[in-house]
Image (cartoon, rainbow, N blue to C red; front, side):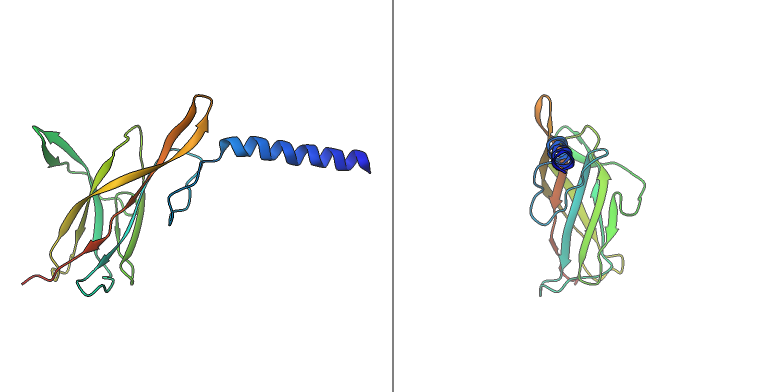
Length: 156
């Protein structure tokens, strides 16, 4: 009996030790950690009107761009639902997750478009906050998290 208890204790301790080193550190509040696989850029937020009511059906996307003499030029990238864009739900919330690759942006350009034409389109620069994973070389930035909330005004 003591031998079985000792073996079980050993395996539990070993599993905690090895999984603890591979887990990512805490994600920013409001985000679940996306562990394993390739690093991701998780973009989430809410789109409201001026009265604070969530707007459903708003197209929100990350705009890919390049800089030319300090001017951001939007690149044409095909839309892939839940990868580089999403539509807001009934409460105005949206989330999409894309592969981050080797890029480590400090901020991204996110745009909200009302495809019904009632509200003015809006774009904003949003900060990227990173979680970290433990590696033999020390903590390394992994997943990027973006909060991008919009308040849209009605067209006149």
